[in-house]
Length: 304
Image (cartoon, rainbow, N blue to C red):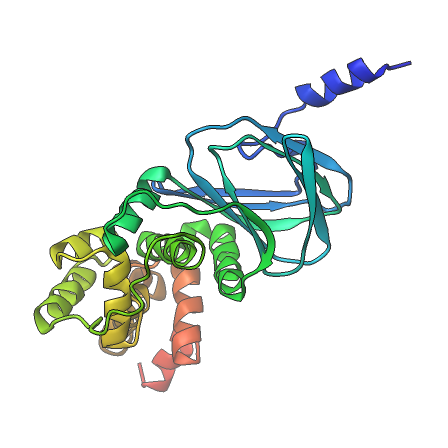
């Protein structure tokens, strides 16, 4: 017969992931580490009760977004606890500076993003001049905006080989900016009237985006060249061009691809590489989405 002490020891010995979940209970466990941001997808199939127990650390903040309904958890604070139900698009924010202990009930499917303290401090300073943001821990609150971004992030995690570094950085900055605007004590930039790029800055940004066919230019590099913060630059670029930097760059790649399809004998795989796509399959999917038909069919239609 196994006593309670032995059972507890066996549970404690089972391997856990970096967020405190039992690894063998996860049927989907994806991670993308960009150096500045860490993105995760954590899913369980069944409704087994499990526990998370992690000591405080200096890792920063964790945002979790539920991709489905039905999960609940009991979160402890000292000798007190509170229960939280998660519907689709429900979120939680957890500060790694605090001990975290929770009991998880029923299955879950979360997309998560880890923000470092350095990112939070810099982002707040860029937006308000304050480098000491305070974001309260919360759980179970619905946030449709983060829910939408989580859906995009889940697809990005599934197809990491196709993920543009520019797009991933832009997504991380957008999520972090939303968190600061919505849930911190930092003043918002929303009241600033002029958020358009100057003609010089617009030209500089577009030149830098076009110069990097493989997408290796970062939002930070472009924003620095324009003497702007990253979050401000993204908003100003979108206000000026009605596109995000990644959308604008992607459309220019498709323009380049159409030119090569019409005026060259390059194969589809050669065009894919020349235009900065990871492979022919990635190129075909993107071209079909933006143009409405596959590149081969489009080329035949033009008479090539």
